[in-house]
Amino acid sequence: MLTIFDCDGVLVDSELLAAEVNAEFFKDVGYDLTPAELIIRFAGLTGDEIAATIEREIGRLLPEDMKPKIDAEIDRRLATVKAIAGIHELLDVLEGPRCICSNSSSARLAISLGATGLYDRFKPYVFSARDVRQGRGKPAPDVFLHAAEVFGVDPRDAVVIEDSTHGVIAAVAAGMRVIGFTGGAHTWSGHADALTEAGAETVVKRLTDVAPTIDAVRSWGGVQG
Image (tube, rainbow, N blue to C red; front, side, top):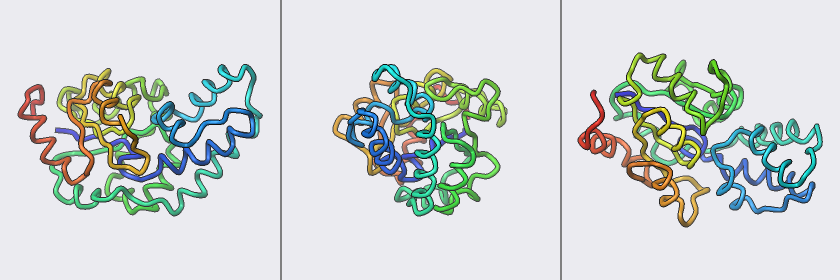
């Protein structure tokens, strides 16, 4: 069975970091939400999708130089990002093929995974939604379907570990099983319920619980191997 990990908020503790940067910049254009509020609304979406939503809500375009500045500041802070507790221990015991499916760019994935010592544990199976054929980010299922194609597995024989509702929706749309994860610094009251409502079959808050949970999901049926 193929295990697919989201990156931000599952492997690396970067969701709050990115939300803090976004909040700082968006405040300058009158979009004054806290990092926590931004996470609840936008976690799992691409920067372009977030910007498009904000532009619709404020009724004007964001400054042309804002997104490059946001990206540069997030990348700068990612150089010291930490891995989510328990990920290395999980990878030591996890059986079967594994990969990463993320809305982040390949360049950003290289920064965050490199900073946490995780890149070498997944390469070359680190997939950005921006690089797949259709190029649509989550909640579209494209990047998950791409991973299944690369590994030659039926999507029903893959389980996805996701921390965002948009990611869960994408995985469900791909026909995959989903385990929700709430162990990042960005978790909020109602996080687990939101993941369940989006389609996660169960939710864990510690990565060390993922391997036995995958075994349990397999026993519930629908997974062939």
